[in-house]
Length: 183
Image (tube, rainbow, N blue to C red; front, side, top):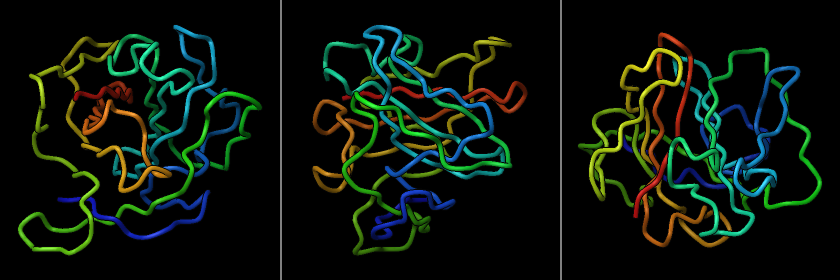
């Protein structure tokens, strides 16, 4: 299933999107980069059957923190279950994309004129080689969930090194998620 550009979205929309404000459970603490200590940028809101996967990565000084690595501490992915509400955005740091883009599922075997911004399920289309992360709790290989493009335009783009792809994984057993990117 492709994820195509669905136009602009409301910042706290419960739908699939990049950018905006994360919807989080009560008590959520905004993630900070383990390498630079700055607050991470919220990148994607992916409501799926497992809950909502929220993806964050460090964009405080692109290229200085290892935000491409699933285990470096410069990115985070969370699985949240309802009830959820809009998070409080921390002051300072690169915490939000410049615009909010709706992601609309579209059958992969049907042509589209809309920009393709990723895909759901299947197998990852690795650019460099298999880097499937293991669950930090049970150590099993995590399940590929989604592939995300940098964005359709500058305001909606995360920095994946220019032309990179982001990969979202989760472990259903432990309710853990992971994110990494390659270029």
